[in-house]
Structures are given as structure tokens and as C-alpha cells.
Image 1 (cartoon, rainbow, N blue to C red):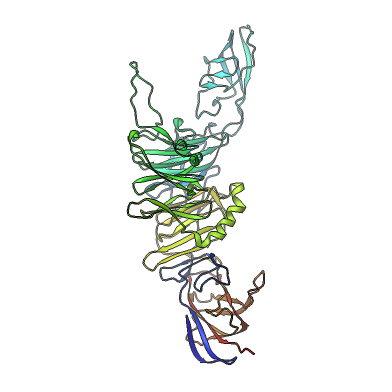
Image 2: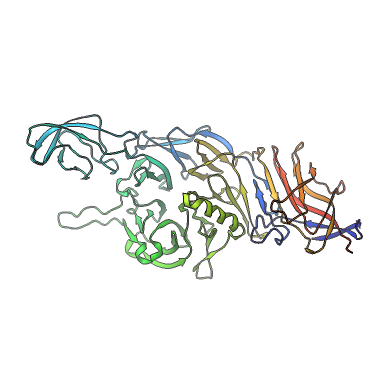
Length: 578
């Protein structure tokens, strides 16, 4: 916004240009030379307020350290935050305290141990079978079956690797033609399955239903800390919906029995061949569309379920009665890279990390027919660069979307940075910024529990963001960079004469202002122009000296306490031309 003040050097009246707000936030859709004033090339460790001002983010506060060997982080409907601890007593729950995270004990597929099991079995051979009489060395969890049968005295084992509970689960070293009355054999099931990471979780009837990746490639489900044997490989991403747990994996959408998340198949027929159907089953989503072979996630969209694959999204009406399930719509090029990046926002948007950037499903007309909106397009260049450099190694697959409970901001959490959307409808603000935490975030380590966002670091430390008794600030570095500003006269040289700002900060802290007058350099050269300990408009402008067609500002702050930056004014005069 241009203005005029007094006389000026360089043969013209002294003018000033006002940037009244920063409500556009980060916007990289245009080059630094053509982007409009009020947009930012970078806003780090800050947010855009409802008034369009820049404010420093609060601190990530250390809370506690999770128990060694625990996995992930999750929260129930009462705001209690938990982690899962393999090797503990299954279903044993220790609630959180002011200084500790809650713990849910689970027994892993390997019995809670990570060592290979080798057993000596003595028994009686009869033709091709072997009956175990003595078992030494511990109990055996069979193959990859969760809490499968153990080898106990009296177990009949086929000589060629078939045991009670499944084929090829263990081997007794005897020959088919052997006929002694007793023998000693060694059975080695291979490496015991270890739970490696938390894939997803939800809450059913107030209790946590969680999904974990096993070291053998299989996916294991736990409800309230107890393994759900019938749900193995029935969902890498799960969702509570209409009295069931739904899960997507491969090309199938699986669902549990009505009101019972531990039952995922009908009971066997009775003596008359009748089956008591319980509402469990699956839908082959991939058979409905070729782009849905690799299902990733799901989220509620109005009265339907949006089911995301890597390439597309299908909308389905789902009912507790499987016979009433009905396909509704397919959206091409609306797949997601990350299962946990899919998040409902209010009632009419579903945000997700797509192959082109951050997108959302949004109703395009009164029929609520869905279309893909480009809500993340202002930061597409940086997100696409991250996809290009990280996706091949799986670095984007763990991206998690959260809704900050007190601020209403959308968080897109990656392991080393968090993209923040400040979205206020009334003042027409939709602005992106980025937080850089002082720690590396663990896979599956981000949840919200009113009033906190809770993050787990890779070293087991737990941090909380938010407060019940007032916000806390640390000395995280805040930085924002403007485009190259031409004041709507990109071909006119200017003498830059002064700088004013409206800003706030704690006593003893400052805002550091640097400027560049040369947009032609590959790496922008910034020069120090001033240090601000508060607003300047009552003190007269701060003098600066520079000449060029454009000016770019880089403004930083690093000190304890809150800080805001509201407006800036640049004083200049048109340069004389020959």
C-alpha cells in the first residue's frame, strides 16, 4: 500500500510502502520477483493469527520419557495418553500422571521376546507322526500365527513340518521310514516376531484399538492391550465407524462384527449348517476399480466413507448390515502417500497428502458430490521437493495430520518438520507456515489430547504443545522472508531510505532485520539494516541506504518469551534517471 511522507533524496518525494498484514502466509506459487506483497517465502516457527499478524509459536515442552521398548503413542476419549509396551502383561494398563505417560501392556507375537527359540523335543515315533513326550527350552509360538499353539507333551506332529495349528510351522528331524520307539529332535521356528512400529489406532467404546507392524511383514491388531487373532493382516489403517472397526489392506476393506472389535469372521456352521452372521466380512474394493489395488486409508466424508488407495479415492455408503453397503463415487488422481495424513476437518473437508501435495476432498455442489481442492497449493513446491527426495525411502509414508484442539490449526507432521495451516473463514485467512522441532519425531508418534498436541521423539522423550494455564515460550528461532518487493513498479529504480515496523517482544529481546537489493544472485546476499526492540513508528523511521528495483527482507527473532510482527513500512524515493 503506497503512502507519502515529506521530501526525499534522489529527486523525488519520499514515499513509503505499507505491508498491512501477512494473511497469505507462505505462498510459493509465483517466483520471488513476482509474488505479491503480504505473501512470504518462508515463515518458520510462527503462525498467522486471525488478524493476519505473525506470532511466535509456543514451546514444545518436555513431559516425560516413555518406557524403554515401548511403541508409539495414542490417546483415549478422556484425553489420557498411552504407549504400548511389548513383553508386559497383556491388557495391564497404567494410567498417565503429571510426570509419566500411560502404559498399555501387550504380549507380542513372539511372546514378548526377541530371541530365536530352539527347543529339544523328545517323543515317540509312530510311522510318519511324532508324539512329543518331553519339551525343554521353553514354549514355542508357532510360525507367524499370533499366540499360536505351543509344543506341549502329547502334541502329535507330522514328521515333515506340519504341526497343530498350521503347515510348515516347525520340523522334527526324523525320517518317514524311521521306526524307533523314541527320538530327540530340534525345532527352530525362525526369528521370533517383534512388533516394530505403530501403524494406526482408534478408540472403540472408550478403549484403544491399535495396529502394529511385525518384523515378519505381517500386521497385528490389539484391543485394550490384547491381541485380536482374527484380525491379522486385516488393516494397516483402521477406523471406528457405525459400531465396527474397519480396516484397509491390499485391495480389501475389512470390518469386524457389529459391536465386537475382536471378532472378524462369522462363527462356524451349527450341526444343521446354519451360520449366525455377525456383520463381519470384507469388500474387495480393488475389484470395483483398478486404481484401488493398494488401499492406504479411510475417513468419514459427510454420510459416506472415503477410501483412499495410492492412486484414487472411492466413496462408499457403509452400514452395520453388510448387505446395505453401497458404492457411490470414484475420484481419480486423489490417492494418498500416507495413511495417517488423511484427516477430517470440520464436517465438509478431508485433508490428505497426495502425490502432488496437500489436498482436500470438498463438496463441489449442494449434492455433496466430492471434488479435490488444492488447499496446499501455496506450498506445493516445497512439498513436492520433499516427495521427490524422501518418498523412495518411505520418508513420507509416516506423515500424520492432526487438528490442534485449542487453536483449530491443521498440522501435517513429518519426522523433522511440521507444516501448519491457519485457516480462518471470516477474515479470509488460509496461511501456511512451518515448525522446526528441536527433536526428531518418531514414526507413529503424534496425537492430540485436549489441550495438547503430543509428540514422541525417536529417543523416547514425550513433548506436549499447548497449555491449560497459559502458553509457555522458549527461545526457538523465528524467521520470515518476504518476496522481492517492487511496490508495483518493478522496472523503476528506487532509493531505499528508511524502515518502520509495528511489532512486539519481551524486554531485552529483539527482531533482527536484514535486506537484499539484488535479486540476480543465486544465493540472496542479505545486509544487516537494523535491530528492533519494539515498534518504531513513534521514534521516526530507521534510516537505511540502498538502491535497486526490488528489496527483500529477512526478519528473525530468537529469545525467550512471546513475540509478534504486525506491519512493516519501507520508505523510498524514485531514483533519478538520465
